[in-house]
Length: 84
Image (cartoon, rainbow, N blue to C red):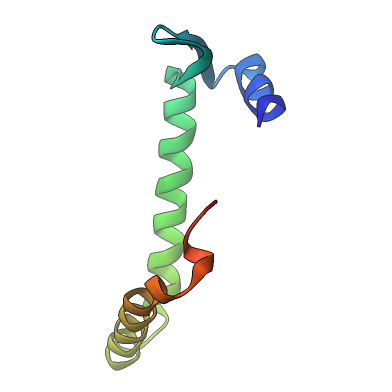
């Protein structure tokens, strides 16, 4: 994780600063360029999802939504949802 953060800080999208309450902890913040990159990536992701869903009929979309809701509702029973 430290190497990833260092790379992001070096390349400009992230600012790293020591946490005032704990000298071992750091606070990470997005720079303006980092926020633009995240926003652009999220918009592109949303557009792809809309295109994928748009290829389905209304009935197929409803089925996909229902199945997704079922998977989400039952995911609490699986240990993989919890991070250690």
